[in-house]
Image (cartoon, rainbow, N blue to C red; front, side, top):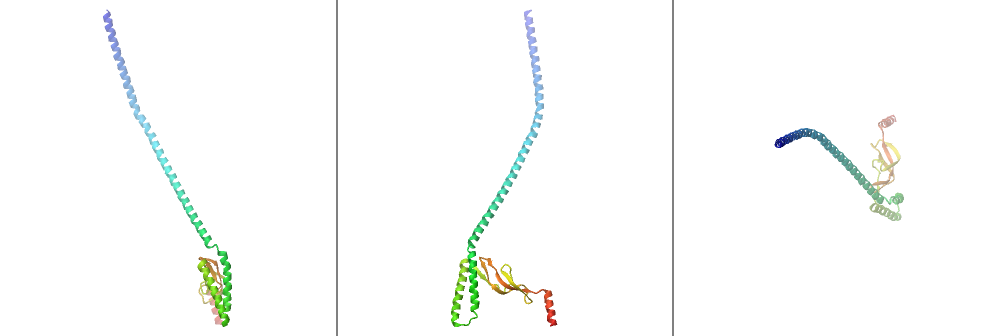
Length: 226
C-alpha cells in the first residue's frame, strides 16, 4: 500500500511540475509577444524625438551663423570708420602744419601790395638817377616774392585777360561789352595769392560781361538811329 501511494504521489508531483513548466512557458511566450509588440512603438516614438533634436540643432547652427555674419559686418564697419577717422586726422594734422603760417603770410601780402604799387608809380618817372633806385626796389620785391613762393608756398597769380572765375576772382566792378562772349577780367586792382594750391586771397578785378541778345539788338538800333 505504501509503495503505491508513493508512486502515485511521485506521478502527481511530476504532472504538477510539467503543468507549471507549461504555464511558465506560456507566460514567457505571452510576455515575449507583448515585448516584441512594444518595440516598434518605442522606435516610432524615438524617431520624432531624434528628428526634433536634429532640427533644433540645425536651427541653432543657422542662428549662430547669422550672428557671426552680423558681428563680422559690424567689425568691418567699425574698421572702415576707424580708417576714415585716422586718414582725416592725418590730413587735418598735415594741413595744420602746412597752413600754420597762413596768418603771417597774409600780413606779408599787404607788404607785397605796397611794393607793387611803388613800382607801378616809379615806372612813370624818367630819371637816370632814380632808375638805379627803381631797379634795386624791383630786385628786393622779386627776391621776397621768390622766397615766399619757394620756401613757404605762397604764390601770386595773374588774372588780367583771364576768364572770370569766382573761385579766384572778386569782382569789384562790372561792365557790359559786345566784344566778349564770356566774363573776362579787364583790370586787376589787387593780385590774388594761393598757399599750397589753396586760394588765400582772391584777386580784386574789374570784369567785362557779355551783352545779351536783346541788349545787342537795342544797341544796334541806337547806332542806326544815330
